[in-house]
Image (cartoon, rainbow, N blue to C red; front, side, top):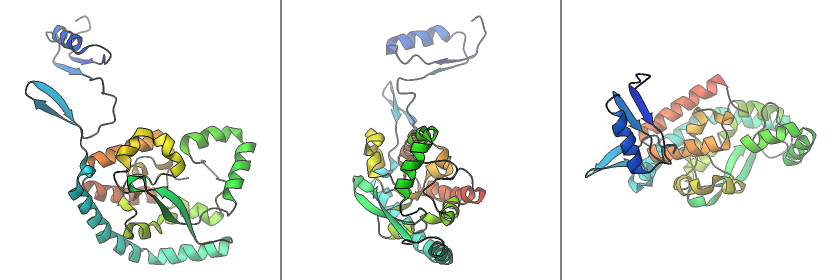
Amino acid sequence: KETEAKDIIIALSDRLQHRLVEIAKQAEPFAETIKIVPPMGNLFTTGVHIDTMGDVIALSVPRNLSNPWNLAVKRGLDLALGLPFLILLAPLFAAAAAALALDTKGPLIYTQWRLGRNGKKFRIFKFRSMFADGEARLAKWLDRHPEHRAEWETYHKIKGRDPRVTRVGRVLRKWSVDEIPQLANVLRGEMSLVGPRPYLPQEMAEIGKAAEILFRVKPGITGLWQVRGRSKLTFEDRILLDETYVRNWSPWLDVVILLKTITALTKREEAF
């Protein structure tokens, strides 16, 4: 009343429901709009809409990829686009393989265990971008540079020059060319073109209860995490984006993410 505020937000989630109603009624004579933040108002729920059940208000949380029909449509898109992508990128695949063979010794294709649908492990395919003794190099680097340990624990990556990555590997990662072999994972039915990140088995503890949502679907070569910040995102941010994707999936969303991925790669930003 003193400030002549016309828009009022009541964000007192620790109050009892009847008390929130009382406060709203007290504010009603002075306000043009009144918004009440519910106790779960801090939940990352893009796509939530309001329903009414009689005289009771309810929040509907979408779970689009819990629908078997939607999963079938998504698989159809993977097959329809995955094979043409593989054919289109074949020259780039050959060029990357040749550069790797000339740069350092070791296999051209690197495989690593990841968590797929229903938490089932599968081997993900990538162009090898690291030295064969990459993990040992990382351990020595973190011992010599303790200031980078917190960064590693937060992002699960090292900004700048990762001591594990080869010269050619840095170029491949910058343009995400190292991900091209994952098209084989898509055609094999282990991954999708778009989806949640393919998490490592040792990250299961950090994923926590979000696993119930994330592992309902196949991981993707790209996803919301790729076009909303990539490696600058914290681990928690990536999980929230993946949850949002699973809840709000649509064929159009996959198309938009694929187009935005191309834009993100051409800018060459936020990748390390």
